[in-house]
Structure formats: structure tokens, C-alpha cells
Image 1 (cartoon, rainbow, N blue to C red):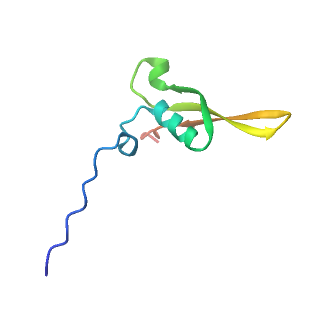
Image 2: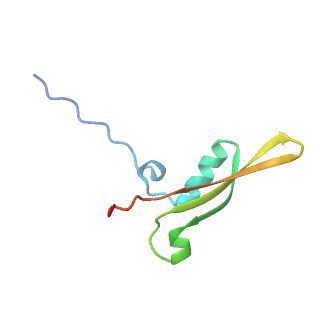
Image 3: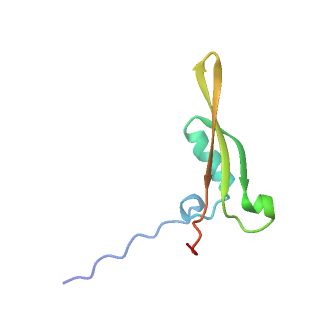
Length: 83
């Protein structure tokens, strides 16, 4: 029986491989959904250390006259291993 073919090797992609700067990734994702990254902060920004949690604010234009834009905040980061 022939051995299976090796898996394909993909070129390095910082966004897919998790090597990209988090705020740059957030800006790309927001723009892909017609939004605008209005703020972004990482733990590294606040403490000068390694990146951990990332907090972003994304704004999106509306067609509503009394509310021309809506903005939402989101936070993401590693889950502590010590329970």
C-alpha cells in the first residue's frame, strides 16, 4: 500500500500564523467588514511587556440620521493556565 502524500506546505502568513501585530490585524479585520479601528491597546502597550490581552474599539457608519456611527469594544487574550 502506498504511503500517504505529505501535507502541503503553506508559505508563512503572519496573520494566519499568529505572528502579526494585534492592532494591525484588528484594523484589517475591521476594514474587511466596512468598519474602522478607532482605538487599540495591548498589555504590552500599557506595561511595556509581552503582548497579552488586546482591547479594541471598532466604529461602523450607519444610515441612521440621529446615530451616524456606532462603536463597540472587544477584548481578547490568553486564558490563564492556573485556573
